[in-house]
Image (cartoon, rainbow, N blue to C red; front, side):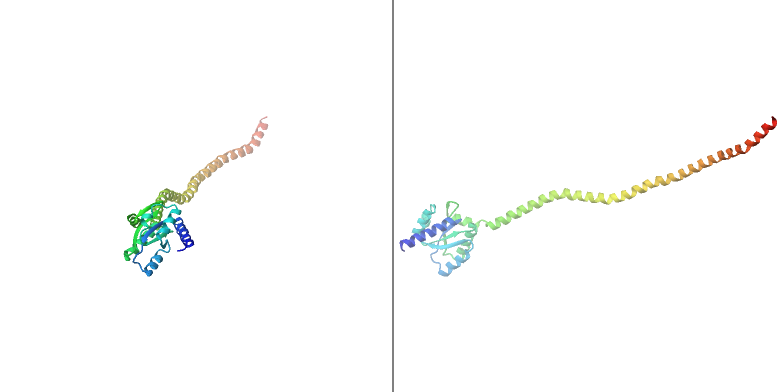
Length: 227
């Protein structure tokens, strides 16, 4: 490989390291071209799978500030440069290796530290980011529903109380005028009876006055006769 080609390859691998969330180093000895294509297709959404030269990869890792990969860069090497969820990528590699034992996971790099093959296997056994987010969303929804229930319970009780009061108020409002009208109706005959009594009491007085008016001339005549 020409020097310019080597420099270009190192720059490309360095870029892959720096732009990836993680990297898994594998040995692909024994895999066919068709199997490699299948593996790349299975990881297409979360990782870029590339066959690399160990010497160039060491230089690229050094340029990217990554240390500790030298022991993993032995034999035929291919690296899965992970762009998405590292757990999902580890699961994909594990599933492919189960059906294609020729794929061997040697180790990887995640969050500033080198991982061995066992740690990559443990990573593959974790729940994926989507599952964790789904569970978190479910837990938050359940908590919010519980909180909403606590807040809504007193409000619903108050609403039922107000509704009951509203149903009761028209009945009370109708009953109140009837209660007021009853005493008035009872008082009316008493008032009429009092007025009739006053009228009867006034009648003799009028007759007495009339009698006095009638007898007064006669009394005057008798007085003049006596004189």
